Length: 461
Image 1: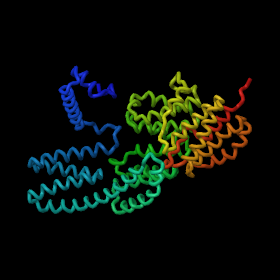
Image 2: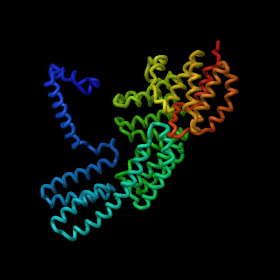
Image 3: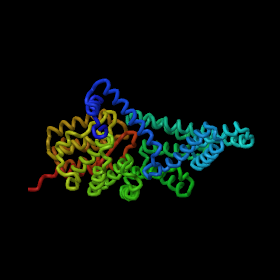
Image 4: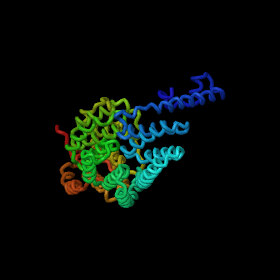
């Protein structure tokens, strides 16, 4: 009932289950929900962490956690012999997987066993190992503190992202210093992700390609712990960077190669597919884009996505319907209706707001609806003046100026092409903005301008 009816209330559930909404029925419902919850929690002990959709480290870490639980229970029951064996096994596995925190916990258990059994030699050896592991753990925890501080600041809000940009160089430098002290996987992983975060925010997509290539080289050389490094993270960022760096054909090749690594039930599969779809859209391969869109919409897990993610897919569908309706995998799409249900986004971020404004303008340009175009033109001016003042928003400002020509020059395609040439040349020389500025071009502005010129062509009699 709760699965199939998201909006059911407690009173409705009580009435359907017990035939009334009395206090007794509501109490019975609360107890039932508690029992069901406990039953579900008990199944957590039986999750299959060998499933390929999970990050690679989980199966190894879960083995350590299982051993620690078993050893701890036995130790509390006074079973020292078996408990010692389990703690030793966990310590060995934790050391191989560089799970320093679990290695420390194992050594703490062994310390207790040897101290209570007066095994002086074993105790002294464990104390030395424990001191070394705790020192490593302290360095790793400091690296984690820095990383999560940066992650916390990675807000959707443009203003906060730009604040993070000023702090990231210091965060990277501090983590590099920690890596010099302890070259463990955990510190490396935080350093690697901080570098990617910095490069992504400033729009250094060639830098991301280099960083992901370097880590791939380290992994292939056996210099990264195979039990910890999840190559899918690398694949994900590499494809994203190829999209933003406009290395489209290479990106499409990599996306096709990497797609099978992501399980179609995961949220990462859908985000990866967004990048794959945008690569196809930017390359003008609309038939391929339509195939990818259909794959996403037909995925039975699509309904599980957050509302914002589903709205992004609807926007992609709207763009594809506008530029290549013959390839649309979903028929009977009424574009006029779709224009009225496009999602609204926070005014603090310019990303998809810009994409929506552009699509609306293009739709009314196709209709030659001067009244709506004048209204949208004023909206574009106000939006640019309020939200696109940063230097990194130059591409959007330039394209808005191109769109304004269509109205000010009374849809004269010859004049628009001539007057738009300097703006178009400047647009081609302007790189894509970094993620700190939340810029999203579903179709490159250069391609959208060519489409606008086509829409203004006089109809052939």
